[in-house]
Length: 127
Image 1 (tube, one colour):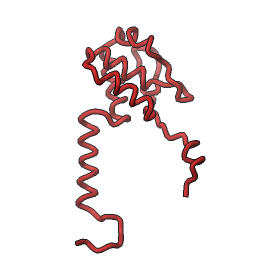
Image 2 (cartoon, helix red, strand yellow):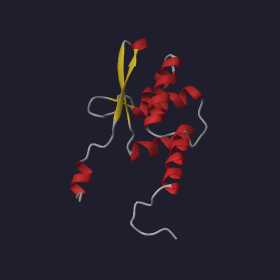
Image 3 (cartoon, rainbow, N blue to C red):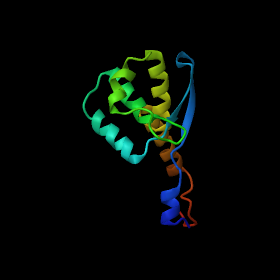
């Protein structure tokens, strides 16, 4: 059984490295912590222009090799000025690995349907 200390010490925020030839290298897109995701959702509660949404998403998910954010709130405006094709590509990865958007909803529904139609995982007889 996991202990409190083991759970709190676990490095459970995964990432995906994405090649960005337009920028001359690669970036690491990370899974957001609950706190970071909540802060992003608070900002996105108000309608945002597409380029600002993309920049906010990337500022929240591009991380260094230690998982620390590369960008902060003061970088959002500059990020929104980057190549649209790059922004779209990277935001797609960020949304996928953070399970945000229609694709995440569809995947969750598939998983729920599979769970409902399959075994309950217990030895109890069905009613």
